Image (cartoon, rainbow, N blue to C red; front, side):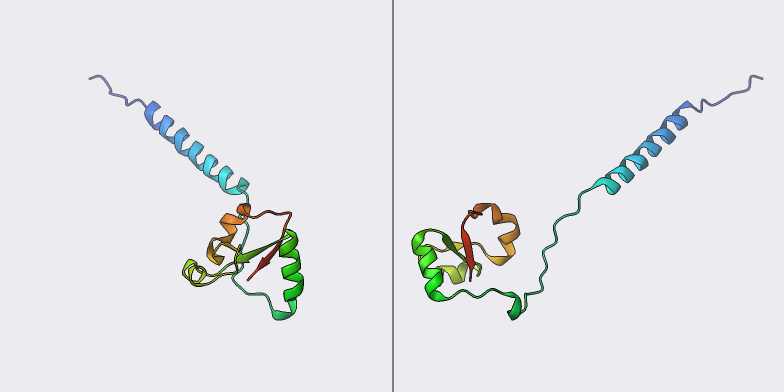
Length: 108
């Protein structure tokens, strides 16, 4: 009677594939860039630079400052400083590119 031998070749290919997947996922995990962390802890009063109304208005009139309204859109619709840019606080990290980085940005 002839001895039937199973071909181990498919299992060898499956083993190599699994090994390559493990190596690939390990490489991705080890080489990924950390995402910037946005803290939800508000700054203390001592850490926030205060701007006088006169200085803020003078800078805005000169075109060197932008008022940034970080309240929810509904609050912005009710009342806002004329000319202010509305970017709600929870959208700020993804929308920072909309602001002119050369301007003095005065959030409120």
